[in-house]
Image (cartoon, rainbow, N blue to C red):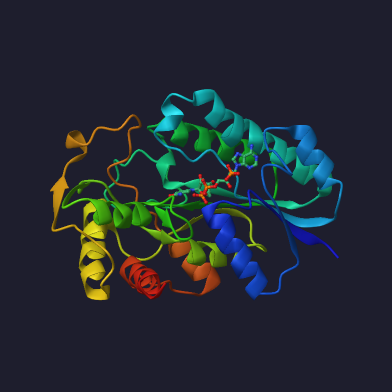
Length: 287
Ligand SMILES: NC(=O)c1ccc[n+]([C@@H]2O[C@H](COP(=O)([O-])OP(=O)(O)OC[C@H]3O[C@@H](n4cnc5c(N)ncnc54)[C@H](OP(=O)(O)O)[C@@H]3O)[C@@H](O)[C@H]2O)c1
């Protein structure tokens, strides 16, 4: 029997995928960087030979948006060359490649959610490498799943929500960008969508419902922290503009993804960011 091979097992989305596959009793094998390094074609091809794979789900990526501006080669090695190697592994094992991409392939000039037909025009090195990886897959494979998602949060501490919670414990006031708008994605929901899309082909957009801004999210966390009695020293959150908070990488001012294609295909509606964030924070308060 063919199995699913999940690559990049320690990542945030991968952790949720593992949980979701266990829940659904899916037969899978998950590898981390030390077992299979996607920058090495040999490493990927040799593991590909060790089993019979129905799907290769790639959660490995270079994801440090700001650092990518100075680590261009590293970002390219993972997000472009790594993808080339994954394509070779998928071809060698006749498995369908399932790849994750990002809202940062768009430039943010649109005023309404980006559909799968909209033309990418990345602003940052990270966005450019993610886009280049997409193009390589589209040109090389006749069947694949490519899911673009945005503003992920979930397990671990490497996401905006965990960072705000941690800053609130240490600071009396916070300054958070209000003029970048997009959609948050709960990693568990994204994992569920990835598995539901396994029989499909093409590019898909997924995020939780309703647009927001980093400032709105931080304000919602601030209110919830008080409600749930989570530890905090924070008394006020101030909205600031992108200009007042310069970062090495340029980010789109607007990157909301249109999720209509996924929702009508899967015949499902997904909860809003406020619902999923509320549950996440409630769980945190019980820990
Ligand atoms: N996070 C977001 O807000 C966001 C938004 C939109 C799209 N995405 C996309 O969603 C996907 C998953 O993101 P994520 O946030 O879950 O990523 P993540 O937590 O940063 O995980 C990335 C994983 O890649 C692994 N990795 C690094 N170098 C590797 C190599 N050479 N070979 C094999 N594995 C390697 C890392 O392993 P180690 O932990 O061992 O280093 C890590 O487990 C990515 O494609 C990302 O571009 C993310």
